[in-house]
Image (tube, rainbow, N blue to C red; front, side):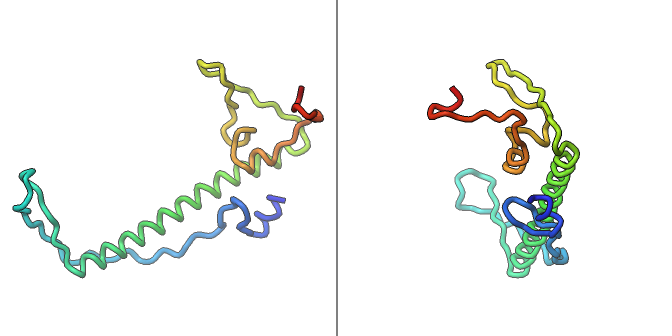
Length: 142
């Protein structure tokens, strides 16, 4: 199901969008703002920044530009991670796989494969199926 949704470029569930947002042009710098010494402060050398309207508009446009650039970087990272997981899923489809584990000093077991394992995100967990299923009773496995 997830492969078909990715091929059709659907953004359902946690699938990242396959296209980037359009980035507005970076604004050109405007007049510099001035430091004004704050005489009311008991801390000593503290400064206020005197902003003019041009600087506030420049700052708003700059922050918007950087926010969209960061969103596109995040989307690229999510798409790359998803593509790796989908490639692993396709490669090991209908095969039995085993996950080696590391034990920490408390005796907790953690899977070694970083991309696809039973402790990963919803896509990772939902893609795995036990090769030897067991029925659960009213108290669980025992």
